Length: 438
Image 1 (cartoon, helix red, strand yellow):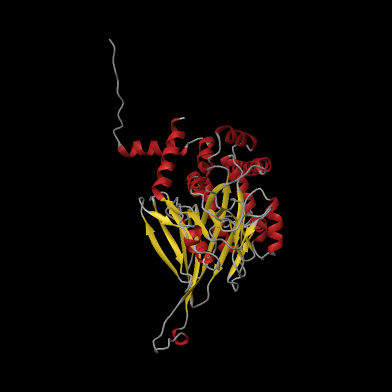
Image 2 (cartoon, helix red, strand yellow):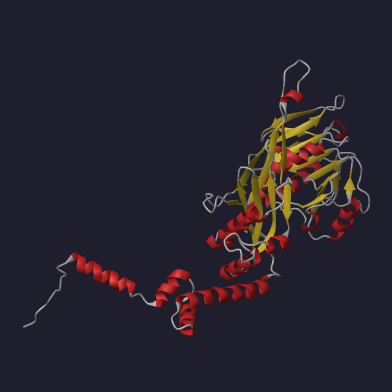
């Protein structure tokens, strides 16, 4: 006869006591692995080496991870790191912003990489000593030597090496800045394309970031003629564009920029002594400019010259030098000409990545050029345009909007030339579809 027996604990306290005893008897290997997160083989090796001493094994594992991280960081340091995140932390009287780069956007979404960004930003606030200065810049070398906020015995270079060992990509501490305020000043920040909810020690992260310091000017010193008072806000923001590594703290001469730009592989713009990398253009940008140039050429307008894309525009003092989308002039370009100071029409393509830069910086400086008569802004996503016209007599600028079916008139000196928006946008759509089906 076959008998089945089922043993049941008749005492709940006895059962719980046995379960607690079983949990307390967990092997050192499982405890060490759960505590450190390192691989099973590494944890086993550490315990064997130190006779199951958990503290010594854990310390050895951390040292090994540090050494492996530095080794991998050395091997990968020559690889380009063009992705990454901006990290921003703001307090009542201090704010920090850092840029940390990696090789791929995939790693930028990694939790370990985002923890590094938060650590670096918090470390900047902890270690900055020059609180009397309005702003303090940190270059790559300075950032690397700062102590970490979590472990003062390690530098930011040490924890970056650990991150490299974890994510398997080159990681670069690019730059950082700290803003300090005075009693009458306030701080504000903006993070575009934010990837987190600011839970990592209140560090917000995204693809673009800006810090703004502002203060209200004493209204008693700003009384108008009619006796009423007015106030204004002065702002200082850290540029969203990438500043040249050698040009972070002090301006350079215009001649130095011109000499270096002729030999540079990447394009840069000159802003009153400071050099910024030209933001990358979207594919639709070049396609639209090609369609616009073709349309102008087909009209065979007399004394209308489309300047080559590599010719820059220079503003009067203060000197700003930009690469425009497209530039029209009544003077034919000269051999080896690099800059024009007398454009008649400037055409810019507005995309989400260029909107703020063009409309809030370039347009203001473009309007200081005496010869300029029109600035045409094309919005490919909305299939509309708006144009800033200069009145020849008063030199005042007015704006007019155009829809998909409208025609934009060129200056009268261009013999009644025009841009037909429907032709520009329709040719853009058909060309993109043709490439897709190929």
